[in-house]
Image (cartoon, rainbow, N blue to C red; front, side, top):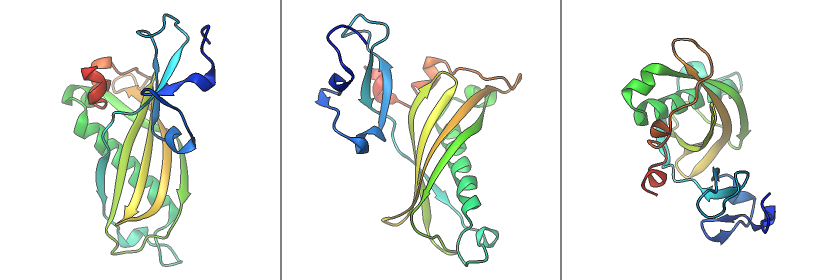
Length: 180
């Protein structure tokens, strides 16, 4: 940590960082302009816009209990995140990069049934090196059915090795940061 800064002094866009709820929508950026210290980071509320992905529930998604099987949520999250990537990234970047899931943490809150009108809202929280961190909230109307935190690794489509995204590509996902 740099002189004069403690971890508790980190602020969110000029406001004190106040709690766990805000932690869900933050990203870490080097603090190069305000303080000349290469190890300092500032916590900023993400400028990424939420991406809505409609989910179709198939009869095959329904388990022996009459509601959607937990494994189907993983399928939905993968489809939503990949659709988000394809919708916002330049076509050349989509052709040159692939994504593989590293980790999913799912909190199931309410069951989902065949015929439900369900939407996944995807938010890219941050890109760090070759990894991207997403939060996906699955809803039926106002009801939150599941919350998913996931991390993904970007791969070069030709070599299948981890690949960092160029800053210009990342800026397509954080438009407010591109203007700053």
